[in-house]
Image: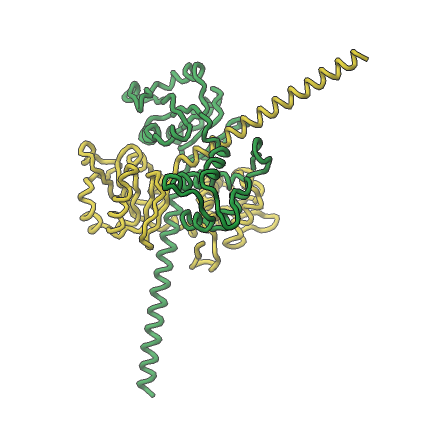
Length: 243
Length: 243
């Protein structure tokens, strides 16, 4: 739970917060298409979330929707942006410049969302000195000095699993307050003032696997049902013949 | 909503399903530590989910917990694995072998979860022929033949944003039923039988930004509160002096 201090002084659950970036993306799409208002029903169809869930989510931070009018897209977009703090700027560094680190360094989208990459660190001599979008990959042992000279809000960790505890400890000692962790290890630090988001890509893949399985099972059930029905028809036919 | 057909014939909401991989990971950790049972309270402390949420989630698919005993870790681990279908095997191909594609190709974890990478495709002549974990990067124009000769369950899309509609159409025409999409574009295909999981890395980063902001605001409020208090003390002191 978190408190939206400058707004409505109302608690917004983290589950709702986690859905906001998605609303934000959809609303941006609508604005690009010059759609200025939308009903929860239409939004529901586009997003694949129930209309009642949408109304419940958006009511959390004030009633933007008007009965029979729908939501004002731009107002809602701006308000969600405010709640998410998209106009705030954060400085980030990437620790670990393997494929994942480099892929993230290349994501222009992060910059647009207010996350500015100012440093990349690794220990591999073969890539140190290389530049990604004008940011040079530096050796890990330069990180202390770098963090003294530059304020870093977020460290993005893409180092191998086994190195995570050590690197996380280091990051904490440098006073960095946000960790975005891709190591497949759920990071828990015993530092109260560090905020961690763990990214588990395989979780999403497992959900896809689950859905594929459900689809498979549903198809098998359907086939079995059809087979049963045609068997019934056949038996009925035979019973008729026998009469 | 989806129907768990071979189990309890009970609807498990997709929101619960999305949390299951996380339970699954934590339970695996417990098993590695030889912990055989755990209360919802302990699990709650480890996972940062409320105990009542845990009880509610796990009750969805049968009562594994016993009052005063807690959950049988191994039983619960196995059952969640069954629901998620972790013993099922899926074949995957990666389309787009840039940094993100190569990072995903290198994730050994996917293999462990039942997702076997059998092909990688790109159009960049400089990387075609290169092997990642024994899988050769092939040219996109070999994809048709490849998918005729090999059954592919899931295509992982890491192609640039603008190429997504074309590539997705292609994938659909090849009869691939699952799409794991990293393009930052919410993919919606007009093919009913394709299941898509869109991954939006920046969503998670925005949640981190939100949390950092909330922390910042809380600190500012605290400071302002402290300043107000010390001001009160000072004023009280002066008032006393003036008496």
